[in-house]
Image (cartoon, rainbow, N blue to C red; front, side, top):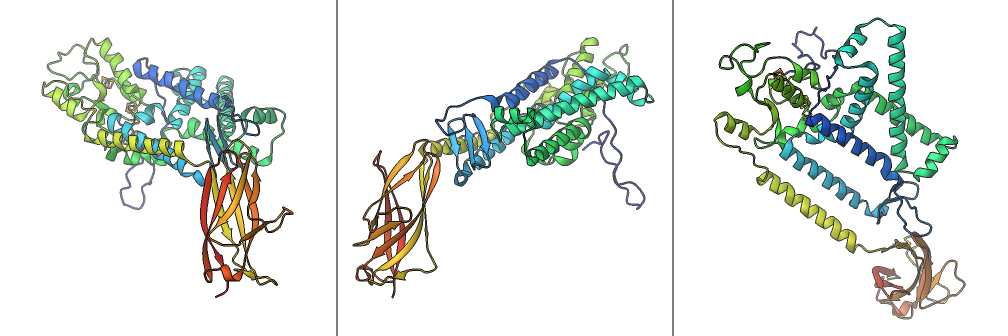
Length: 483
Ligand code: SF4
Ligand code: SF4
């Protein structure tokens, strides 16, 4: 593993040397090329989706939020288009996270840290902040000069404008994040009229500060020291994975400014350093594959610019697999294997997890029942000799319509039921109403003659029937009595 420009110094063990070097500020140079172009296109697509998705409306019927994607924490629901997830169904969100993780592993097996280089929010926001920096302070040379220059009115002005725009972007990112946890138009209106609670302000300040610090200052340090993915990415790639690779066999021996020396004496690398100048993490890819490389491909654009100028074949640095590079070095044909056991495993896992998720979502029950039996006392002997048990009966109506149910009990002869809140006593069947998308909690009492019990514990079933559809939901419990 090669040493990066801003990598920590190795501790020599003399007890005096520093454990970590100061960060060396990186001033990436901009080069045009396909990787830069795709990074910019994806940046605007991802930012557009992030900011606009919360404004997409989705009609779920009266009384329900009409925001397509909403994580309603106070209401304990997640709404993702037509899917509504209740707290007890949080495993669906876990399933989505598993899908995302396996997709990341699959992408790594195919093209290394392509996620880091093009789609990770740290990369996207840092790229945006760098664009602002470039716009205000100029290209790499001008930025370095400005950094080294003493404070002046011009420098102060540029710095103030840059930081003000950074802060505005960071605030916008934070507001957009909160949109997914609130009704976006209402939150925006409340923010504009100053009608927001203390916690909303705290979250806004924390998120704004984090974005401002991470994208404005910490940048590549987040990838080096904070993100665990870069640390274990090497176990997800193999010799067939496409990684940003310098073709040492073609580039070496490198010679600086050796345009006029025959290529039989030198490699194609002229040691111009453009690949290092372009790198947002400040590394030299010619030192080999490195943990600090986020696979953004900007060094490829930079090197191709130089190769074009020198009229040499492009792709001295390229997205290539180790196997293919060796094959080309030996003059063999192209050997890129995207379909191989590792990628097949990931494809199978992805298909299985996605199928299970879709199948269970489409077949899930929209009615759930919980029964909690009273334990203190286990039973009561009434003055007429009958035995009474108490239950808390909860009906989760996950439909968007109000529901009426009929509740009866199986397994106990001559049972009578009472529910707190209803005047009718000793009923054989109870009628229960639960509004749409609500939990109905009912306190029930069951009464049975002592002689009808099987013993201290009689198995019974609560049978709940949807009056409208006739659907039946049955759940077992016990009726306790004396020995
Ligand atoms: S070495 Fe190249 S691909 Fe890797 S981070 Fe630097 S510029 Fe991006
Ligand atoms: S940009 Fe290309 S030619 Fe220039 S130093 Fe890097 S690898 Fe060598």
